[in-house]
Amino acid sequence: MQIDLATLELERAVRQEDHAAVLQQIDRMRDLSASAGEGEILFFEAEAALALIDFDRAEAALIRFAATVGRGSELYPAALELILDIPRLRDEQAARVAAEAEAERRRQAALEREQARLAAARAAQRRDAVLAARRAEERRVLASRETVRTVRFILHGRYSGNLYALPPVTTLQEPLTNQERDWVSRLLGQREQRYIDAAALQRILSPPFRPARYGVPTGAGVEVHGDWVSSRISNGHCRIETQARSFPEGSQYVHPRMFFDLGPSIADGSLVFALLTPVQFRGDRPISVRVDDTSFPAVLHDNGNVTPAQGSDWSAVTRSIRAGQQIEISGTDRYTDSAVRIGFSAIGFTRAFLHMAAACNRSDQTARYLGDGSAPAIGTTTLPRTGALREGPPTLLPDTCLLVVAARRSMEEVNSYIRGMQARDRQNARAFGSPNGWIAIAIGTLTRSTALDEVARMVRSGRVPDDAYCTLGAHFLREFSVPR
Image (cartoon, rainbow, N blue to C red; front, side):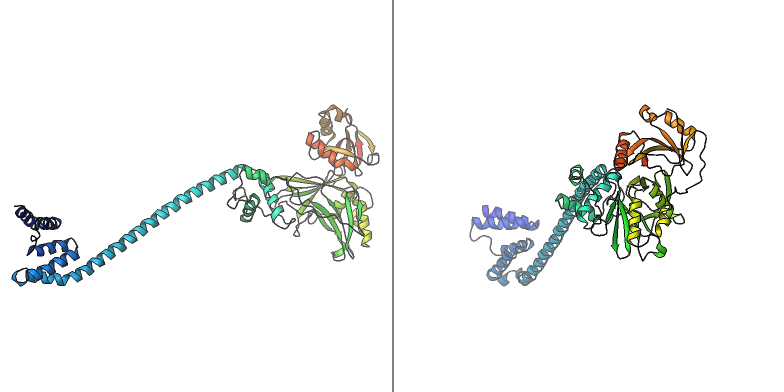
């Protein structure tokens, strides 16, 4: 009975083309009886196995069918055809499997590529976010042009290999060059740290920046006269020079200097003027030279130095320096666009110039550039005579100079300014007429050797304005009476 039921289930599965059920019922029948599942059932077994791509079972069933049933079954021809088709079906299946495997491999590769792309995009987003944060932090800590300038000066001073080559100009949007960012990484010892945060800035600024200095000439033929040095550079080539005495702290990459040259290659016996070198001023902004209370227009020359303006009387500058005490070069800083004043001392200039002229056998140039000793004629004198105490320059004690704090056009303005002074300064106030028509206001005298430092200290304390200076007053024409 169990065999009959299995046979019935087998027939139903064949009609329904339920190939898995066909094979299941055949296996069940063979479990019930070793002789069951033979005859034409073998053909149906082969068809079901082929449908389920079980070529080995199908081939075994067909061979047994052909051997046991043979030509006595009308299914015999179909069985033979299936036997012949099995190798082709195997190849086709293998090709399908290979194609499916290749398609799967490609799908998987595409998936992996997409996953890698998404991962790279996420990593790039993270890097961009980190970079944006670092840039924002750098913009915060480098918010001022002065800080950017100082950082760049430090980096160039440590790593450029050229202490005297000025760094290029940058912007606050891109404050550092790629080379400077490499130096940031090198200084911090972190390859990926190319942007400056607060901690990095603190490390960079320690120790504080100090500008490089040109060496002072030494050896035979060198003489020091006050704050000026005279030297013979080569046969027939002589120079006088001085180093800046004052400038805003941290504002200059190289300590500024001033020099004048005389030599055989200089046409028509003229001086080479370098009123300021190296120059951090913008050439497209006004530059001026002031000797005490007398100003001269200047320019940034093609040779990179500051010189008097073309068409002006260059010798008027040197004659004023001879009679003056303090020289100031002012302009606009190329890195910060802020006004900068650089102060030099005139003490010793005349003696240094005379030594230079004698050393190069060019004494004929002293009259041209130093004059005959009288005050230089600059501008048109329109000074009042009412209220004059005495004519001529003031008489000062040796090694002293007048501390000038202001200049006004009229005595009314002078008297008003003096009445607004503190009592201690008002008691010492004096007024002197200059060749340019202005009236200088002084508040006493200082020792010449320490005058520049003392003026700087008084400027910092707020007692005197930042354009105060000390002068011998040799060019003053008369002194006026002032209120006490």
